[in-house]
Image 1 (cartoon, one colour):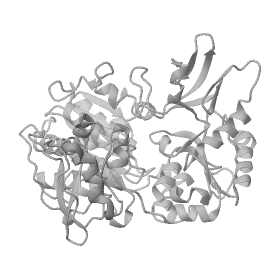
Image 2 (image 1 turned 30 degrees about the horizontal axis):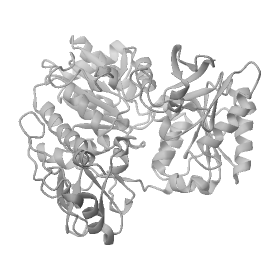
Image 3 (image 1 turned 180 degrees about the horizontal axis):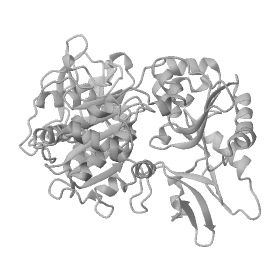
Image 4 (image 1 turned 180 degrees about the vertical axis):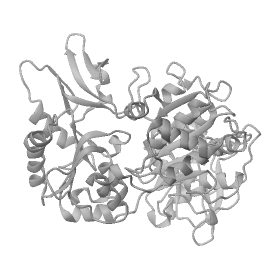
Amino acid sequence: MPEEVVRERAVALTHIPSSIITAAINQLCYRDEVIRDSPGRIRRAPKGTGGLYQLETDEEAQSRLHASASPSTREATGTPSSEAVGSSRHTANGQGEESDPGGWDEDLPDEEGRDATLLFLKPLFLAEHGLAHRLAELLRSPHPLPPTDVAAAISWAEQSLGLQLAPGQQAALRAAVQHKVLIITGGPGTGKTTLVKALLHLFAAKGLRIHLAAPTGRAARRLSEATGREARTLHRLLEYDAATNSFRRHRNNPLDTDLVVVDETSMVDVVLMHRLVQAVPPWACLVLVGDVDQLPSVGPGAVLADCLASQVVPVVRLTEVHRQAQGSWIVRAAHAVLHGELPASAPSSDGDFFFIEATDPPAILQTLRQLLVERIPRKFGFDPVQDIQVLTPQVKTELGALNLNRELQQLFNPPAPDRPEVRRYETIYRLGDKVMQIRNNYQRDVYNGDIGRIHAIDAEEQIVLVDFDGRLVDYDFADLDELQLAYACTVHKSQGSEYPAVVMPLHTQHYTMLQRNLLYTAITRGRRLVVLVGSRKALWRAVMNCETTQRWSLLAYRLQRLLPLQTWG
């Protein structure tokens, strides 16, 4: 491995037998005396952890390096418990930035009280440390709202918006006028959107400047539709500059705002959240809205869960399912899954949630075809491609995204003389195909999870034109690896999105991915209809399996060192 790579990359802990720790570290890090004097080199192996420090060079591997398949050591928060965390040797300057990051490692005892060391990739260490300090700074600074009669303000908001806020929503408004940082979390039907509308109404009435944002374009559009205000992706809000691979908005050039509201916060990784809080001016408020029970961010960290676990960041948990949502079997199913209960199908065909039992993959595929082509369009009037999204736990296997996309492409958009196509590796892209952008492309202004339709294929110019909700984006044939067919996609790829109808196969061939938070996330993606098709055994496994991959993080601990413990929620 080149010296410059070893110098620049930090190290992560993965669970590999301890018998190879010493030899592997010596070979990687001390051969030819490389990085012996580097401040970023490995300082020591963990004591009693049975782990190996492993060098990584791929920045996209950061999220993998931040996780460990060791659920037995994980508490419900997804973060090492505060009692188990020892002292840190790092200090920060008054700006909340690292003054001397040293080796980017943290000492803490393991479950049996033995000393251990966690080492971080340098960008992740600095992001986590800087995020904690910046949140503490915001919470300690004066609130931008003038002294307010909260009870009168709540009554005025209810009258002017024509709604009645539940006790939990009123508590959230009281917290929002008292604290500079607030987390609002809750499941489907608990009134998060209504609360955000009331909050924006109150701040706007005081003449304060407001910015709304979400991690993805689809989530931002949903937030805009729900509030009637402009919402942008976080990268647009922070004015990402593709030429310099940096943000124009930062600590020295903050946003011109008094309130920033971020939706779908569970999707935001620690690096992007750090960038955001650095761009929030000292006088402004930050409101983070999300559902902590959904899947965590694809990128590293578990920011929302860590903030909740810290018990020092103000949080309001909305638990009451509102009357208008109580009749939804989708909402009932989601809450049943959260409580470890099998979700019940709607009692009549007019319902919005159903489980259809099918035992083997061929039977499940046949049922999917019937649902997509005949039963759902005929009963509900949905367009089978535009309105119905097939979600699946995995990419591979017979019921995975790759094979389902091949099956559904043949079903809905088969080859035809008037449908030009282009093959890229194992995928055929055809005129009219439903496709998804699978990584952020800031130059094209398209983001991971955006869905479009192939509008044109120019074989001579070697360009594919994709229609993303009325905006045409061109791709060279060489760039088609940024697109994948989207008749079916994984649940992870659906995060931040909502569809009129969701259909999901469930089978034990997805055994390792059948987890409660994955099933819960899938169910909550459907707005008007959710249909699960598969074996009852697989459904039971998904509902009962609470084990998730551990996210190695000290964000909660860092926050606890900076702020007093409170009782929130």
